[in-house]
Amino acid sequence: MNINLTLIGQSIAFAIFVWFCVKYVWPPITAAMEARQKKIADGLSAADRASLDLELAQEKAAQQMQQAKEEAAVLIDQANKRAAQIVEASKDDARKEGEKLIEQARAEIQQERVQARDALRTEVALLAIAGAEKILETSVDAKAHSEMLDKLAAQL
Amino acid sequence: MADTPVEYIKHHLQNLTYGKLDAGYERFDGSVMSESGWTFARTAQEASDMGFMAIHVDTLGWSIAMGVLFLGLFRFVAKRVTTGVPGGLQNLVEVTVEFIENLVKDGFHARNPLIAPLALTIFVWILLMNVLKLIPVDYIPTIAHAMGLEYFKIVPTTDPNATFGMSIGVFLLIIFYSLKIKGVTGFAKELGMQPFNHWALIPVNLVLEILVLIVKPISLALRLFGNMYAGEVVFILIALLPLWAQWTLNVPWAIFHILVIPLQAFIFTMLTIVYLAAAHEDH
Image (cartoon, rainbow over all chains, first blue to last red; front, side, top):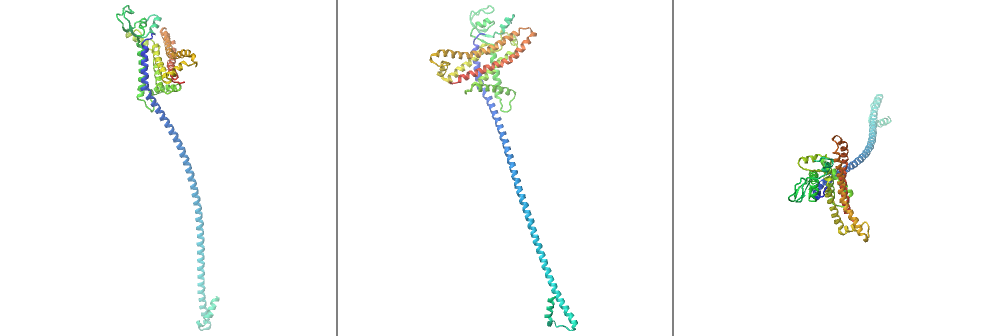
């Protein structure tokens, strides 16, 4: 337990070890640890950001979905209205067409009737003349009696 | 080797001393030194007669070996350090470094890039030196004896030279930073005007403050030395028991020292940080 040169030797060794540690051991290790800490922190914040982004994206998607639904509803509504209109219009058209057809038919019928009557009238006039001729045994001067015959025909 | 218990204990507590003996000194075997020269001490008396001009080869050798082991290991890791997933050894080193970093962060608020590596060096070095204590007390001395060395004490921290060597280093740093941070006048004021801030009490203050200053390295060194030395003595005493009974005391004492070894390393480190933090505080 004598105090001797060992004391100084130990102090020198201590100084050298501390110097070496300060210069070659501490900096690279702490630098690596800090770099790793930064890496992890970055990773965590990136993850946070990603989850935030995801949330935003989901919100946006839901919004778009909602909007699309609304638009679709509007479109369907419009389409329904338009279809109803078209149906209504075509019904109208059809009715008009029908009425027109009926009108035409009526007109034709009327015309045919008139023709038929005229024809009949003529026929009747001829028949009447023929009958009269038979009765009178003479021919009737068509020209002389045409006035009377026309009157007769008009009465028919 | 020794025969009686007292001799056995004394033998185990004697360092391997290489020192200078003066001309005319009578050696243990009756021979007389014809001229002064350096030699290994063969007895405790010779070792103490060598005075200051002697070296404890075992203390210095083992402490340097432990320091080299520490730096070699940490440098090895520092060279292939990765920022990715660390392996087992790097993990161990990083845990130690982080532990010291937190200690320094908590206890030392000034900016000084020297303090943390200094604390790391102190902690791991003392820890490794203390760990040597868990090697059974007779192993290494027996091997050394077979190699012709009379004494061999492997635990450097049971030698006050080693502990004082470190604490003096710390003491010089305290003085250096006190002067650097506070300046000569600031440091002188701190010594002279505290704790009683009155010119008439300057001498009293000086005595008190210088005592406080001097006590720092002494308490550092003696606390570590005292604990380790006392523990070593108890280990040697236990080794005197009959072989079959040794484990009953040896095992609990060794387990207890698993606690004491890091604790003493921690206390030395912590106090160093605290003392240097005080040296950096400008009033």
